[in-house]
Image 1: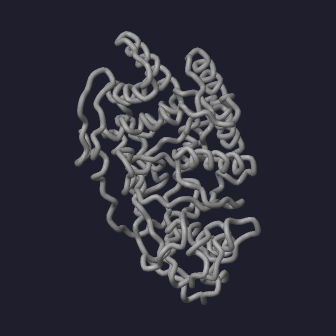
Image 2: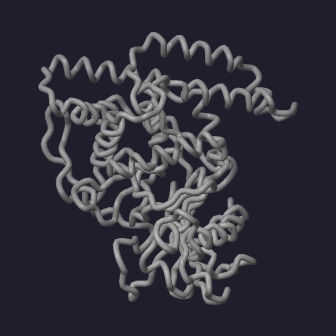
Image 3: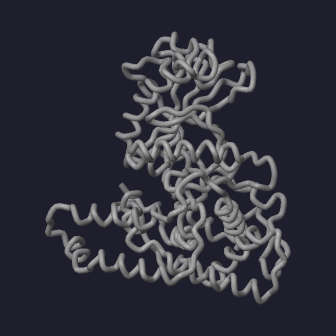
Length: 417
């Protein structure tokens, strides 16, 4: 059943088409109290964020007194987690203008990364919002007040992203930054305004992430399939060898093997299985499954799909968070997305998620997704119904042989922490 305010028209072998206003009716969630989990990390990140923004955003904002800077943490609704709330935050030892301080040599303009009206402003005229919900990162929204006109083309709002533990390696940071910049240039992701070791400044996009149950919506599922197909069609300057899948599994397996001895029944049950042998069997299975290597997102779950509040056209979805993106087997990206239908992250007790296997997409729902995927991939070709059926059957095999197995359980555990 389509979500209220969405429409599907047409049909045929490639499924329905999206109407112009089909994705524009979704509403942002109501305010909710802050969730206790992760609050200490958030407060620490808030204090550090001032220091980084003082160094990179530049201008006279750093001249303001500590009590003059207004800080309003904001949270969206992500997987049912409460994210829309506001409270006063102490600025700590970095002072009020830490977000608005001097620019680094070589930065854009006199004030560093965001020149123009961002320079020469007192800190009490700035608005800072903290947007939590990312699994690997913490996000901070900085805004100029409405009454202050822009000087040039500088953004009115920027998003400060602080990397989490996932992206602490230098190689990962470099690759992710290059990837983000390329996707921004191709209008497939937010614009990039500045990069530094602990994070970056990027375009703030009024939007909300999808919720798990919305992945089942036929209109949204079709739009996600189209986005995925476009992503898979990109050429990127990275290794074309699909090392990511099994490299990730091997890291997770090592983490499990390195755990200290315990009498917990869950660990005893886990140790009954030879996960190394299971991974070997999975390698053999995928070796016999022809699946092209394409540039994959590797994490197309509801929290990484934004529903835009102010779309410039009918393209109302945007993929974000490219930390895991790499060349990989096409079937993995599709199968991984189907697995995300199963995981409910709104559970309020440890481990803060719940697997509901009954929510895995039916064959009909999978075919609906795959037909829209193929419609984008084959949009410049004319194919027969027989060829269409074969392509659909092949994709079904790819997707269902590439389910997350060891990687899924480890990823889910990481998300719950």
